[in-house]
Length: 154
Image 1: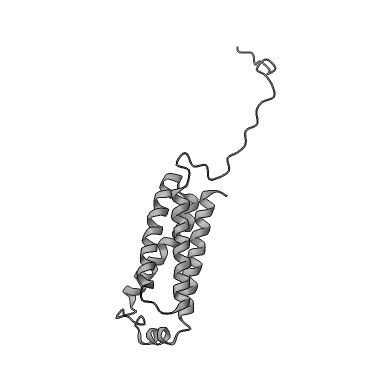
Image 2 (image 1 turned 135 degrees about the vertical axis):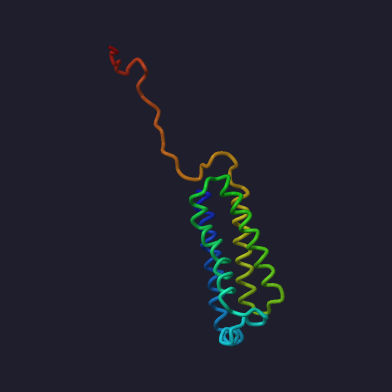
C-alpha cells in the first residue's frame, strides 16, 4: 500500500473518532447544560467567537493533513506528518487526563494509537525518492539497435 494513501487513511480514521467522541458528548447532560449556558462543561472556558475560531483552527490541521498526505513530496510529507501527529497526540493526552467518562477515554486511546501509527508510518517511510505512488512500467525493447530502422540524414 502506498505510504501516502496509508497516511491519508489514518488521518481520516483519527478525525472520525475525534468527531464522534465529541458528538457523543452531546448525550451528556453536563455538556448540554454547559453549552446552553455558554460554557465548556467542567471548565471556565466561555463558548464565544474566539473559542469557536480556535476550535475550528484546531480541527483544520488534521483535516488538511488528509490531502497534504496525498499531495506533498515524500521528504516534506514525512516531517509534517510526524510534527502534526505529535502535537495532536500531546493535546489529546492533556485533555484526557482526569477524564472519568469511559467512552471519552476509549476514544482518546484509539486516537492516540492512530496518531502513533501515523508517526510510525511517516518515520519508516523510505527515505529515498518518493516511490509511494505507482510508477509507469517500462518494458524492455525486444529489438536490437541493428534491427531499428535508420533514418537518413540530409
